Image (cartoon, rainbow, N blue to C red; front, side):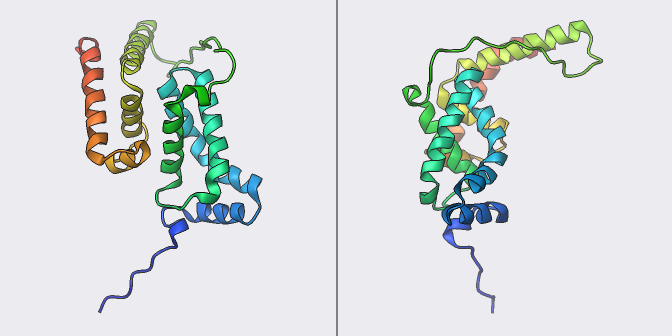
Length: 196
């Protein structure tokens, strides 16, 4: 006879032990410190996705900030049906569809700082690398916001299609189609630049 399956309570089923502990402290009244403990590990992923969706650092920061505000307000109601990162990405993606809810002030000008990837690259290599990066960014900008988000979640975050579907509030099949459509469009734009 098999032993009964042990399951975590609903609130912690998809959370790490550290996240579960911080969430319990948050709900017990230690809101500021526990919220920071919960959000700090998520900021890199949220910022990268926000930059991919908005295309600009200034707007990405506003989008992440508003995502965190919404998360703070809604964390008491977070049921744990998904992982914390998936829940935060859903908030960010939903907000990204309504820029008037998170854009603040005037658009800041782009800050161009070139940081070399390696010290041994020749000037020619850097020019080719920069050209490819520019073409990739151009190809990504031509995608719809949902395609950009799906592509980013798959390529950068390494999420499977079910996780992407939960993040974008669609089916796994629709998530797969978004990623495949994005890949096709990117490859069509990049094709001539990738022939070596």
